[in-house]
Length: 143
Image 1: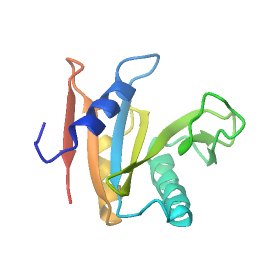
Image 2: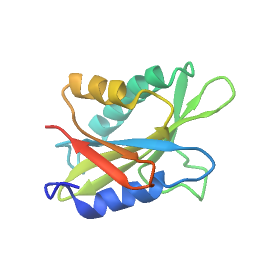
Image 3: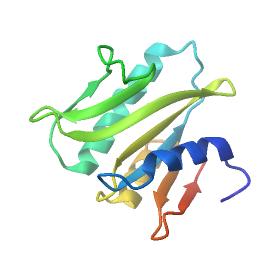
Image 4: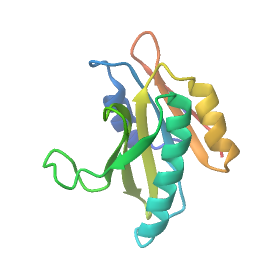
């Protein structure tokens, strides 16, 4: 893992990806949005939902905020399918050193390289996070 990466954030991301009922991959979108830019964070989450949902190929999605669920934390969201409320992605918006990083995770069967490329093509600084065969995390960041 490169020394330019935030070790704590990537360890926390790895913990979210570790094997469970489904294999997961992730992407961390680094922003320059501050804690005062709630509307912009909402708009960015909506935009990223559309990109991830498109690559997941599960149809139309909506964003669930979990306000009525004690298991959800503040700034945690899910992308669910409109038909059947199936899991598409989950994210946490983390305020770190004054700006937000958004940690997304989703089923690992989508084309990770294509998704990350699509996010980067929109101008975002993205770190791709996947587990390799040994359950070790690999990360690749571009600016």
